Image 1: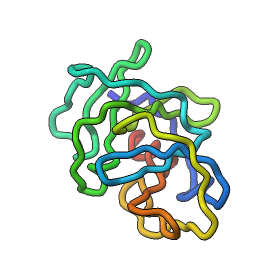
Image 2: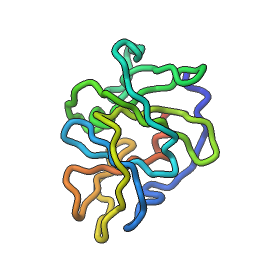
Image 3: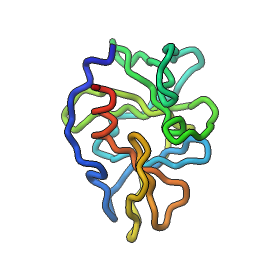
Length: 152
């Protein structure tokens, strides 16, 4: 059902370096940095907008109509086995110059931030990597790994 996801070979941590701008969204007690070049927009989530899917991974919340096609709505909190209330917003993701392929659940609209000096990627879990050095409970969204995960 998600066969339209483009195959994107991107090394882990691509684009992560001090000074790079990312969208910082909150999911429960986690903060997730989404590479700015992959953000295509934000949308508010309304009750009943997400169609649940049976027997999916913990981090797949369901499908959401975006334009004329369904896209998966994903939860970074589920990727690290954290709990979070139902998301109120979603970030539309697309590789640069490609069609959108997924939405990431968020507690609100988020804000753009710069990666601080001294920050580095440490532990990886699925399609997110833990950020160390100046940020609490922050994760970097590995866009290439996520696209590969959905395509496979």
